[in-house]
Image (cartoon, rainbow, N blue to C red; front, side, top):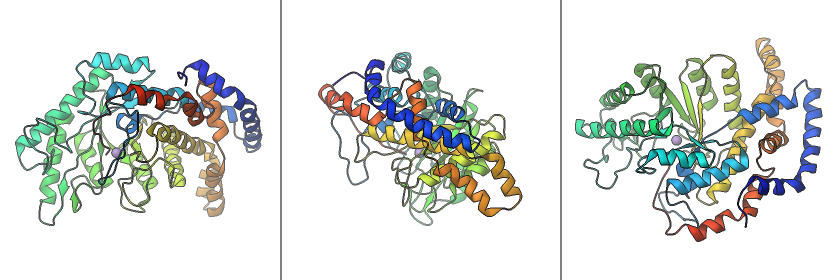
Length: 427
Ligand SMILES: [Mn+2]
């Protein structure tokens, strides 16, 4: 067992470096033959970052059960320590997206300092009005920001405003708002008036946003409401963002769409109109499965990044917030996040490999097969050596999961972290 220091990482990397160099050279030759600059791709991979959700380092669960693992974080300070491990090994995850009230503390300056000690900063803060908290005066059973009772809406607004205040203290620049509001019976709720109330409430939050902040509004097709969700799809999300103003943008969670929806096209639409605010990365087979990014459908993840690469070339202020949002039910959450960061960074790097000029020319000339082959060449490129080089040069691990296992971190935390943590969840 060893602390995950720079020396430890270097020692873990040593036996892998010769093989890594060989792999990178082979790929570099191949890329150069195709007119690509391998070092530029490494530099791009080094500049890429994705935020880890504070709730992701605990074991998730389903509505049937949760199987906690040993050494789980008990509070936000433990969570930051785990997030710090992920960043030290991958050099890909310098920020944490916290969730309130789960991550509430007395002293936010202290929390910010603790993050800094782990080499971390804070990304978008997340509010929570999809469950009741102990001692909360009014219930969210029948909704929060869209509730029929003004007093409940006010309570939900006040919570979001408190999250903005906390975010200011933490150095965050965005709040992600997701609500569980909706209905389970036809006729239960006025579909039109529920959305009106949601818009009213979010406008109150919007008015309190600092000028350099963004409100990321996250839609979700179903669950916990199974007949209608107040903010069900990207169309509703866009309407809301449009009505609220320029600081409001849409957040796309990869699991929050109808089956087989063309998510990359949604990305293209939203970015084209300046309303793509951010992502929650995960993967799924059936619905909002919250599986590990790239574990089921890595090609879709690539196609999403292909649209992002296209968008990056266009509007000047394109700056979406990339965040992971997964539920780790059967793995060590740190290992899942190490693997997911790699998958997301890999999809990004593959999209960078695509020869965009050639692709645009084939598209313009309606050369379908060559357009397809040009895009597919990016996907088919094994970018692992690029990511490994980016990591190693930044002080990260050649093989993050291997180094993590060698460090004995989890076993050590199983001794230190008692009693086990309280509940958490995912959205
Ligand atoms: Mn989400």
